[in-house]
Amino acid sequence: MEKNILINGEFKKGLKDGVPIALGYLSVSFSVGIMAVSGGLSVFQGALMSLTNVTSAGQFAGIQIIAAGGTILELILTQFIINLRYALMSLSLSQKLSEGMTLWQRLVVAFANTDEIFAVAMGHAKSLTFPYMAGLQILPILGWTLGTILGAVAGGILPKPLGNALSVALYGMFVAVVVPVAKKARPVLFVVILAAALSCVIYYVPIFSGISAGMSIIICTAVAAALGAVLFPVREEAQP
Amino acid sequence: MIYVYIAVMAIVTYLIRMIPLTAFRKKIKNKYIKSFLYYVPYTCLTAMTLPAVFYATGSLLSAAAGMVVAVVLALKERGLVAVAAGACVTVFVAEWLVHILA
Image 1 (cartoon, chains in turn purple, red):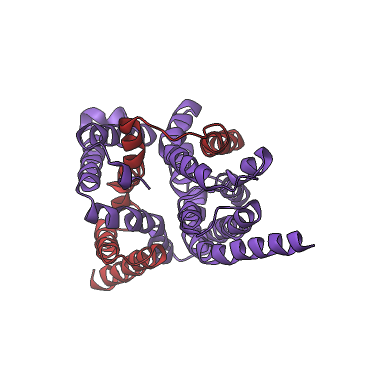
Image 2: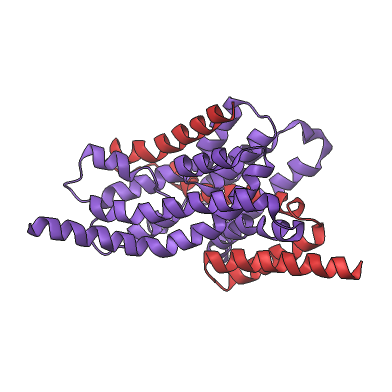
């Protein structure tokens, strides 16, 4: 009985902590929905992608590849490279999970370990229980999926200027993640400028016109990050 | 065919999140691998944004204006939603200005 009350409390705390993330996702995933439809996906396919992936950058690249008629191999490589950061986050998260968490519970918790959920979980004062993590993830997953549906449905009937405006929401979110860190950490600023330069070279220089959008993301991400790792290996405390 | 793509994306993404959470209980020791993983989100998000963002709206001008506002808001460390909203509103206003001035 007492244990049930405790579990309920943890679940409710998780739900509460998930509300701001869910609201943020609701607005940002709107542009994922718009992008999905303009990339040739149906509303249902867009919603299914959001519900099963819960990753902005990965879905964004995936939609680009689908729209461009890219190969499955290209898709796998892109998803792998882009989402590789989640491996690091899951690794950090695994150190903070409560001892009693079973394998099955870990399998569930892994599903929606997004940047924002990871950030909130790591900021949580106590070790992470399964009810807390379940509560934390539910609303953001729903918000992400619902926003995608709204964007996919409304994207088609929205006036063009409004659609154009909303389609930069995701880019805005990316800027919000990158810029504050680049401002504080010189090595991050360096790898960011390098990635931007490489990406522009591949995009504008005619010799590289054979390189697809997905391949370009892989090349720029990996080369800039690898060069950063060799030139500026991060110290222990710099790790997220 | 699109369903195959969606399934592949979901499986790859899930495995990346799941394997370290269940299999690896020890921390990565190699500082180069750690550093590479640390830089990946930033290089990846940048490569996806530039130069693609400039072709995401109706005109180069409105997209550039949106980006400038996003960077300024991000430098002031406004949250995720504020930066995204600021970029959207700027693009909307810029396109409207371009429309009435042109």
